Image 1 (tube, rainbow, N blue to C red):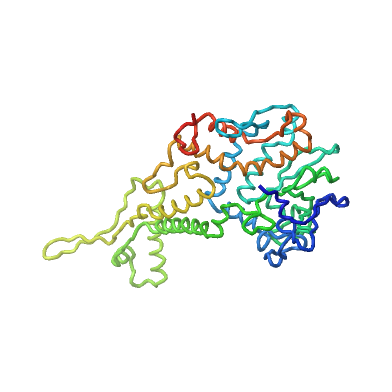
Image 2: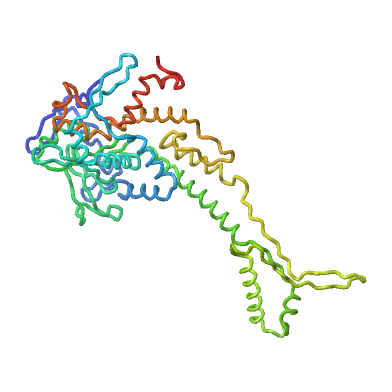
Length: 460
């Protein structure tokens, strides 16, 4: 496999002593491409800039819009939290790895060392990892902060909320020098706004530990994101397509339709018809009363009936209405002055359920295997799968998302390098950090619980 540096052709890499950063120059016949230098102007990229801040979205408020989408959905936030919890699992393990000769799987020899354990506890690694995963799932970007001590070692990691972070524009060499933190970005905030500060940003693609060692700064931001699909500064989470494609609008429309239908069916419970003779019989001088007087009397009767007909404590009540007797052909006929017709409250069976189920399934699949989230509403209440199916799906999810795990854990790789843990504890190898769930999944596969070609068979 060719090195990424091969793309430079005749370009020369050298270390600038003044800025403590790698700089690329090029011969007259070579144009540096990709992250090493912009090939298009910011205007050509359609990037809206606010001072020295690279806008995140057309109005620099995309992360805030994502948060609003999460808040307005009964699915998105639970999905993001559930995905993060599944991936982090029971926490973190570290050690050195070997390759299983039978299966070709990478296996970890888990270690415990007091220095590393104390460091992880001191930096509250669980909070850091959980916050990082939430940002990764929701925003597709993570902004870990590495904090240095006076000896030049990394003293701790801190998770900066992605909604508060904006990257600076690239310099002439294609580098992003700073990350701005704070600012009311959604309201047009700039890097000079009150409460906004900047930290140096390291290039996560190349020798982060070397960049930190070469700098005298005490805090760094290591922006983690995938710059694919023409993304130049910020990445996007896969599920953001649901926003662009209008699926979340459709989900809200279905909920609004069901709510409207239910509320309007509940407004009118009875149709009451009252004969005109009732008013004259019960109100002497009815025909001589003024229209406003008649209206007030009728309103009082309707109010009294409504009070009688509503409320949870009306069981056992008796309603008495007047009847008239007519003598027709020598026979007495009874005629009621009141006719009360209950209005049947009925929402069509399964109304909107299929539509809601389809949209929910689409949203869930953007985050995880549907069986891992549980059954979704349907007319026949189909099962979401057996326990065995869920276990296999969970194992595959952990394996499939390992590249995401490596990205989230990459700041710990930098810490191990800068703090000298590889030399102290690696026995000639580099320490690796895994989530315990992924470590268990590799054991599950190695022990024969899951076969790659057929999950129902064991590997012998």
